[in-house]
Figure 1 (cartoon, rainbow, N blue to C red):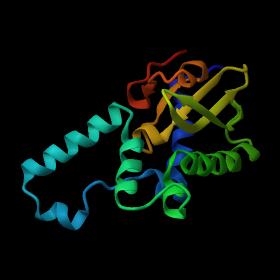
Figure 2 (cartoon, rainbow, N blue to C red):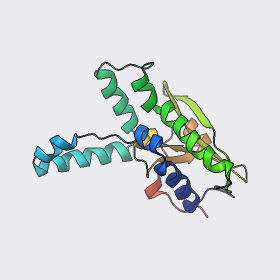
Figure 3 (cartoon, one colour):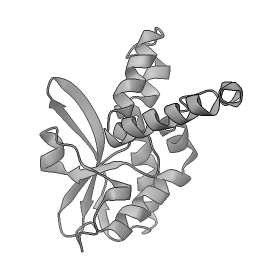
Figure 4 (cartoon, one colour):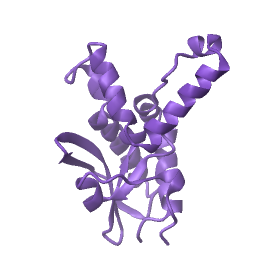
Length: 172
């Protein structure tokens, strides 16, 4: 069975329910204590920028840059847990718990997938369906636990942007 929006939703809800996935994917861009003191226009601007990062599928890259500007480098536990590979690893753990129990009959396996596109190394999650079709879910791109970027493997490997789940058409 090829991927459809309902199956994608099931996959996303498994990830969204997992505490480790929540910790690694979620990025609080404005400290809640600071947010309470900011004028509404500034908060509105911050929300708009968050949407640009999500829809532009660059949120993870921006978070990586912020971490590096703060002196946290690849190879450190704090960086590696929340970079693309760290997110993908936590998703694999969450999904395989459910696959072992037969909870996602539409999915045969869910390994990570890697690419280097435009000189940037990246890791995400590949979902291989029962009909052998393959789709990439990229939570690092959006850093939105319920709105990963979704694409075919071939398109993702070439560096193409996918659909944000919320805007994804129902393929079936």
